[in-house]
Amino acid sequence: VIRLAADYARNACTQQSQQYFSLLIITDGIINDMSLTIDEIVAATELPLSIIIVGVGEADFSDMDRLDADDVPLIDTHGNVMKRDIVQFVPFSKFAGADATELAAETLEEIPRQLVSYMALKGITPNKPTQLNAFKMGVERSQLEIET
Image (cartoon, rainbow, N blue to C red; front, side, top):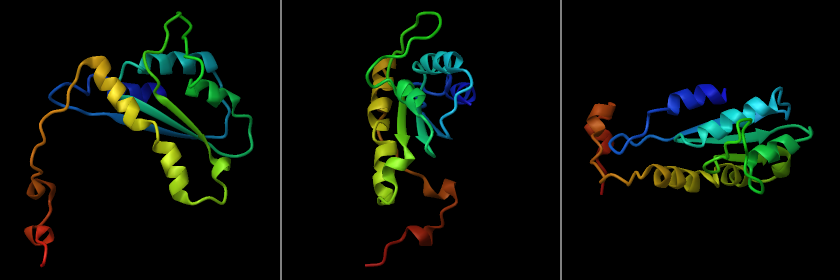
Protein backbone atom coordinates (compact mmCIF):
# COMPACT_ATOMS: atom_id res chain seq x y z
CA VAL A 1 0.00 0.00 0.00
CA ILE A 2 2.93 2.36 0.64
CA ARG A 3 4.27 1.69 -2.86
CA LEU A 4 0.84 2.43 -4.36
CA ALA A 5 0.60 5.74 -2.49
CA ALA A 6 4.16 6.58 -3.56
CA ASP A 7 3.23 5.89 -7.18
CA TYR A 8 0.36 8.39 -6.90
CA ALA A 9 2.65 10.98 -5.33
CA ARG A 10 5.53 10.52 -7.76
CA ASN A 11 5.75 13.45 -10.22
CA ALA A 12 2.58 14.98 -8.73
CA CYS A 13 4.10 18.05 -7.11
CA THR A 14 5.80 20.81 -9.07
CA GLN A 15 6.13 24.55 -8.56
CA GLN A 16 3.04 25.03 -10.73
CA SER A 17 0.98 22.08 -9.46
CA GLN A 18 1.44 21.84 -5.73
CA GLN A 19 -0.06 18.58 -4.52
CA TYR A 20 0.69 16.67 -1.32
CA PHE A 21 -0.67 13.27 -0.27
CA SER A 22 -1.45 11.57 3.04
CA LEU A 23 -1.78 7.82 3.50
CA LEU A 24 -3.74 6.55 6.50
CA ILE A 25 -2.96 2.99 7.59
CA ILE A 26 -5.05 1.39 10.33
CA THR A 27 -3.29 -1.72 11.60
CA ASP A 28 -3.25 -4.35 14.29
CA GLY A 29 0.54 -4.08 14.46
CA ILE A 30 1.67 -6.96 12.30
CA ILE A 31 4.24 -6.23 9.56
CA ASN A 32 5.01 -9.19 7.32
CA ASP A 33 8.21 -7.75 5.83
CA MET A 34 9.83 -5.03 7.94
CA SER A 35 12.84 -4.59 5.62
CA LEU A 36 10.65 -4.05 2.56
CA THR A 37 8.43 -1.66 4.51
CA ILE A 38 11.45 0.40 5.59
CA ASP A 39 12.77 0.38 1.99
CA GLU A 40 9.43 1.73 0.73
CA ILE A 41 9.25 4.42 3.43
CA VAL A 42 12.84 5.58 2.88
CA ALA A 43 12.19 5.83 -0.89
CA ALA A 44 8.97 7.76 -0.21
CA THR A 45 10.78 10.38 1.89
CA GLU A 46 11.64 12.14 -1.38
CA LEU A 47 7.96 12.31 -2.41
CA PRO A 48 5.06 14.61 -1.43
CA LEU A 49 3.68 12.04 0.99
CA SER A 50 2.93 11.65 4.69
CA ILE A 51 2.07 8.30 6.23
CA ILE A 52 -0.17 8.14 9.29
CA ILE A 53 -0.33 4.80 11.07
CA VAL A 54 -3.03 4.20 13.67
CA GLY A 55 -2.50 1.09 15.76
CA VAL A 56 -5.66 -0.62 17.00
CA GLY A 57 -5.92 -3.35 19.61
CA GLU A 58 -3.44 -4.43 22.25
CA ALA A 59 -0.69 -5.74 19.96
CA ASP A 60 3.00 -4.98 20.33
CA PHE A 61 3.46 -1.76 18.34
CA SER A 62 7.24 -1.51 18.71
CA ASP A 63 7.65 -1.96 14.94
CA MET A 64 5.33 1.00 14.37
CA ASP A 65 7.34 3.12 16.79
CA ARG A 66 10.45 2.20 14.81
CA LEU A 67 8.77 3.27 11.54
CA ASP A 68 7.81 6.59 13.16
CA ALA A 69 11.57 7.26 13.32
CA ASP A 70 11.30 10.11 15.81
CA ASP A 71 14.41 8.91 17.64
CA VAL A 72 16.42 6.91 15.09
CA PRO A 73 16.33 7.64 11.34
CA LEU A 74 15.29 4.78 9.06
CA ILE A 75 17.99 3.25 6.87
CA ASP A 76 16.98 0.99 3.99
CA THR A 77 18.64 -2.27 2.96
CA HIS A 78 20.92 -0.36 0.54
CA GLY A 79 22.24 1.99 3.26
CA ASN A 80 20.12 4.99 2.21
CA VAL A 81 19.03 7.18 5.11
CA MET A 82 15.57 8.72 5.07
CA LYS A 83 15.60 12.29 3.73
CA ARG A 84 12.87 13.53 6.07
CA ASP A 85 10.34 12.30 8.61
CA ILE A 86 7.10 11.23 6.89
CA VAL A 87 5.56 8.77 9.36
CA GLN A 88 3.33 9.53 12.35
CA PHE A 89 2.33 6.57 14.53
CA VAL A 90 -0.59 6.90 16.92
CA PRO A 91 -1.75 4.09 19.22
CA PHE A 92 -5.56 4.25 19.26
CA SER A 93 -5.72 2.79 22.78
CA LYS A 94 -3.97 5.91 24.12
CA PHE A 95 -7.17 7.82 23.34
CA ALA A 96 -9.72 5.37 24.74
CA GLY A 97 -12.41 7.43 26.41
CA ALA A 98 -10.85 10.69 25.23
CA ASP A 99 -12.52 13.26 23.06
CA ALA A 100 -12.24 12.45 19.35
CA THR A 101 -10.59 15.80 18.72
CA GLU A 102 -7.59 14.70 20.80
CA LEU A 103 -7.11 11.67 18.53
CA ALA A 104 -7.50 13.85 15.45
CA ALA A 105 -4.98 16.40 16.73
CA GLU A 106 -2.39 13.72 17.51
CA THR A 107 -2.98 11.97 14.19
CA LEU A 108 -2.55 15.12 12.11
CA GLU A 109 0.07 16.83 14.28
CA GLU A 110 3.14 16.25 12.09
CA ILE A 111 1.62 16.78 8.64
CA PRO A 112 2.20 20.57 8.41
CA ARG A 113 5.90 20.15 9.26
CA GLN A 114 6.19 17.21 6.87
CA LEU A 115 4.61 19.20 4.04
CA VAL A 116 6.92 22.16 4.65
CA SER A 117 9.98 19.89 4.85
CA TYR A 118 9.09 18.36 1.47
CA MET A 119 8.62 21.75 -0.19
CA ALA A 120 11.95 22.96 1.25
CA LEU A 121 13.70 19.76 0.11
CA LYS A 122 12.48 20.34 -3.44
CA GLY A 123 12.87 24.14 -3.43
CA ILE A 124 9.16 24.68 -4.01
CA THR A 125 7.74 27.97 -2.75
CA PRO A 126 4.06 28.76 -2.23
CA ASN A 127 2.23 29.99 -5.30
CA LYS A 128 0.22 33.19 -5.15
CA PRO A 129 -3.35 32.57 -4.00
CA THR A 130 -5.90 32.16 -6.75
CA GLN A 131 -9.56 33.01 -6.60
CA LEU A 132 -11.72 29.95 -6.21
CA ASN A 133 -14.09 29.56 -9.10
CA ALA A 134 -17.02 28.04 -7.24
CA PHE A 135 -19.13 27.82 -10.36
CA LYS A 136 -16.69 25.32 -11.88
CA MET A 137 -17.14 23.25 -8.74
CA GLY A 138 -20.91 23.04 -9.21
CA VAL A 139 -21.79 25.53 -6.49
CA GLU A 140 -24.86 27.62 -7.28
CA ARG A 141 -24.69 31.40 -6.95
CA SER A 142 -27.49 31.32 -4.33
CA GLN A 143 -25.31 29.09 -2.12
CA LEU A 144 -22.55 31.70 -2.13
CA GLU A 145 -24.70 34.70 -1.21
CA ILE A 146 -24.65 35.68 2.44
CA GLU A 147 -27.73 37.29 3.90
CA THR A 148 -27.11 40.37 6.05
